[in-house]
Length: 492
Image (cartoon, rainbow, N blue to C red; front, side, top):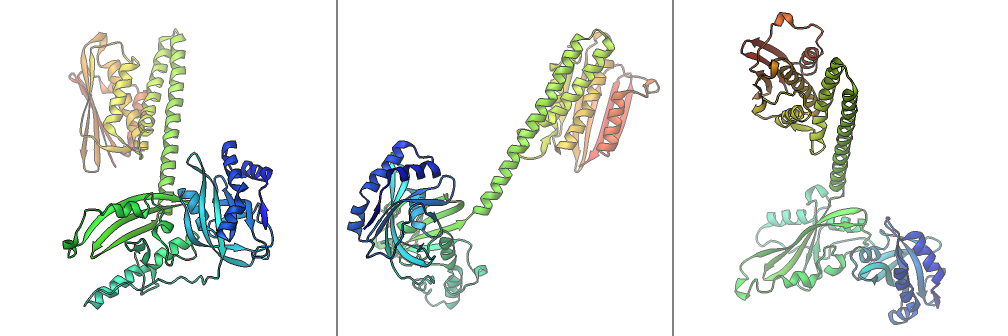
């Protein structure tokens, strides 16, 4: 008999390939010590595999087989095991359940293929699967996969029968004529009665060489075993109900199998006989796309968060510089710059919490209003700023432009419209007419003489250039004794 239980070897491989702790490794060694007993009772080959951390691979760490009766002549210790060759091993790792009589493939030292039938039992420590015990027998298997039987024909309706057969993939190899889901139908005993070609393909990708005559519990990847599902039908029908079809959903969810993701839907169909119907669909590409979108959103949120923080840091530094300056003109310039920076930060503050690149224009304007009050643009507390009108959404680029323009207009009103601490009101109004958007900033201050406007005014230059060049919009300024109204319109 070939039997190897090398304690040091098991420990070294566990440390090399896994994150198992000492107690979990000892649990593997305890089973390895009695491996020959399994070998004798099972009358086949026995192995212990550990799963490689963060990979769809396993490693043989213990073995026992009768050399004279076995086709194996060399040790497999340290060999890498692949899911596509031994699906039972990985199913037991994935689900923590026993996998019985599942066909696998092994190779001798000359890389000749050896067909095997495996029963795999998970080795657990405190409910965690730490390794698998493989009980294996060699057999000769024709790998070609064919359905067990044809689906029962629909009575007196050849057309319906043809459609039924093509959908379930019994009469056609054309995948375009089949559902994208793999379909498995089990009888009341849990044995597979029907399946379509899509199901064969899905299980081949999981390493199954055959699903012929398999029991539900050997093919199932949902949290429910067959007894759990059958228990759901107790009391749902009687002998008098055989003329009715009762469909009761048992399970609908997503599972991870190795590096792939699947959606599994299980229902009961009750009409004279009980059928357990399983729909399984590979949603790996869909999940990858969802992950890419989520990663993009996380990255986007992080970028906007950092930009906002950096802008606020710059504003804080300028604020410190303003406090240390004794020149009123310098203080004014720094204060204006701080407000411009904070108006840009508004967009990034809103976008760091969004799932797309669109922000509410009223949210932007409310933030501008808040900044004006919070950062003391004016000492006059008799001035009220309001935001009203129709809300609409704009992208980040236009949001930044709108924020800067409105910031300049409110800032000008605060500076010049209410001299000597006069009370007043500044109204910011939004409107929307289809794709045309309009924003108006109006105060009830003293107004001004347009001919006396400084041509080199930075604030007015910003307003004009941003409206005309960035928004490709129109700008209208009206002023008089009853105040100033500035409106700009642009197209989305």
